[in-house]
Image (cartoon, rainbow, N blue to C red):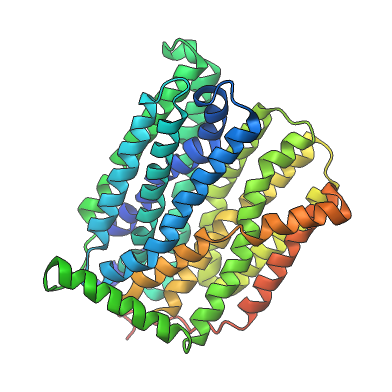
Length: 428
């Protein structure tokens, strides 16, 4: 009984250690992906190159890294399940991402080819590692009924950790002389090193304290073959696993909407006359609001279930899209950022934990591979809808087209049957 009561505590060592990996790698998502890399790529690595060319190069780099993950994620997930090596593969991909991020410091002025290559590899390390990190959720959650809290806690720490380092990095760029740096450009270069160090240091707990059950395997070749066989079997089974398939379809639509809003926010802010500093401030606002909001959504998922929580997020996004179509001032943009910050972590956290309720634990890596694959193929329909709507209805009303993605996703989600939470061992 004493052991079971201990397992029912949310904040035990393995749970905290797992969540701190989100704290660790979110620094890459904020400082590098969303913050400095796009700006630095245009103004330093591609100095003198036409803006449309740099946009094309950056878009191709993002597409290439995403395409690699789309292909590899389910395969690697299946292999990790068959061999019980989720943590080892997480360590490999994290190492690749950390080293590549650190090496961005070495890319000098005009060296856009090196910068883009390192960015692709670092993004691969980040996204690939998340496949195994997500799959370990079922290992560290004390019980199935606490999975929503644990997932929300991970996203919350990610927003807080990523936001803290990003705030420091922004301050370094704005006041380089206070840090003994020669220029803002040097501050950006140093920020890439801080991200790599932050990512490495806070990855240590998950490597030390999260235990994964060992699986006997017939050597490397047998493990890979077994993984491919399991993947083929799951692909066949998905046709009959209606609930999981419906959820993945629903997720694909509404996360497409989430990603499209994120991708469009900066450009839309610039189009209404906001300065880049204002946009960075708005991004920080999303990070720090996202911390308590993701925690709240985790508890909400436990109390009322993941589906109602996801629906709350969808409704808020629909209101935000409507708000954006009438927005004209910077203050309104900050309100929009606050609205998104309230739900962006929650809708992601509850989606991750809902899948955990639907799948067999022994196939977690594989299904989370599919989950990440679906996430990486998102933001495909959204940009097309916005572009087509802009031609037909005008640019301001075009953003309303994204509401279709949330509505369709919500309809598919309605037909997802969520199993009742399992009772804890101590109650069994």
